[in-house]
Image (cartoon, rainbow, N blue to C red; front, side):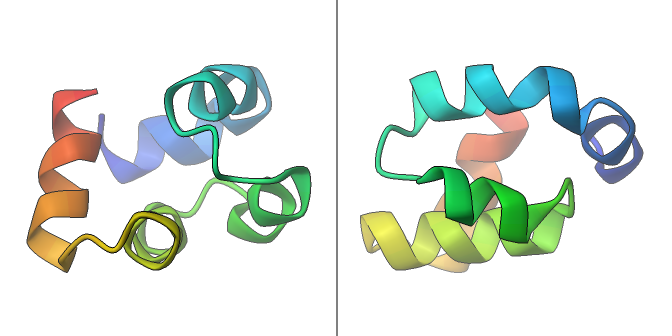
Amino acid sequence: MNSDEIKGKWKQLTGDVKSRWGKLTDDDLAEIDGEKDKLVGKLQEKYGKSREEAEKELENW
């Protein structure tokens, strides 16, 4: 999923994001606000992944 898709569909995607990455809180999702870089950063922070791992996981989603 690319940055524009994430930003444009963020409200609809938050439930899916929360299901897939359960460690992300509602506050995290509000802070991310559909920005791919912020989502990647939160995945790194919450799951201890490298930037490359987090980006790859997001791309595979």
